Amino acid sequence: MIVPPYLNSGDMVALAAPARKISRAEIHPAESFLKKCGFNVFYDERLFAQEHQFAGNDELRAGYFQDLLDDENVKAIWCVRGGYGSARIIDKLDFTHFRKQPKWICGYSDITVFHSHLHRHEQIATLHTTMPINVTAETMESAAVQSFLHAITGKELLYEIPSHPLSRLAEFSGTLVGGNLSMLYSLMGSPSDISTDGKVLFIEDLDEYLYHIDRMVLNLKRSGKFSNIKALLVGHLSDMHDNTIPFGKTAEEIVADHCRELDIPLIFNVPAGHLPDNRALRCGCQIEGKYINNQFIIKSLNHA
Image (cartoon, rainbow, N blue to C red; front, side):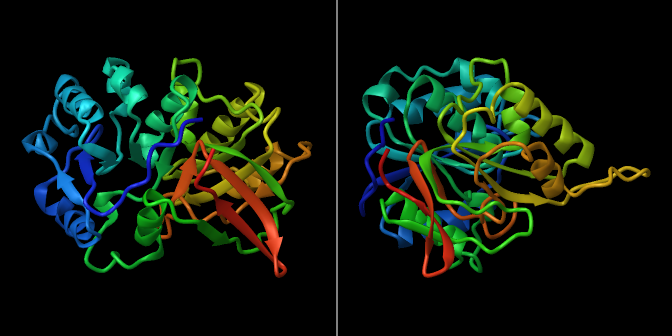
């Protein structure tokens, strides 16, 4: 894996919208935050384009993102929000120049498309982080937003993991891959399909029916995504729905049930995903889980 250069004061962070549309007011707090941290910020009017729910049509979004990939002055691309749309443009992008001068691509949810695609084809690390849509005047000092700053500047990321009755806490280390479960499921069989062999896999999700969670986790398992992983890390599985006839298990119980016969560490309560406590993780870099002073700690390291 190739780790892009970490950022210093004065470096340029570009804002991109590869999926759902965004307004100028919605990015203002994040822009202020970046400038307060000493970064220069770049975007142009294409960021605010609109076509129904998208930030402009596919060609516009792909063209804008391509310009950011090729701009040598841009040191990181922070995707402003998720939603849906990244998969519609990923095959339109040319990563030739990006491969020669890699930069951080940051975001979560729908941005899992980039995490998965770049790891499989380019072997370049990315950042699973909160996004500008989540930054407000009240959240700038939050653990999630501060962890983004720490992640992009190369600082150590260290998270205490609360106990969970379904966790199988055991020490592990390996290269982190993963992201949003629904996106990983949707990418299976495509050129952006994730490779989990010998890796530490992270999953999280939001606003799904419980039987959908079962279907997706089962498919990952049947497709071999769990067969040779070093650990499974489970972030927030939030705002789940049930049918009139209950499914009978929580989302966490569904994951644990499918991992029952797997002899791997299974870690719930990882603070990442679709809740305010969405801490940064370096996908493509080493991650470790270990006991320190009788507490289970996850360290997202700054190297491959």
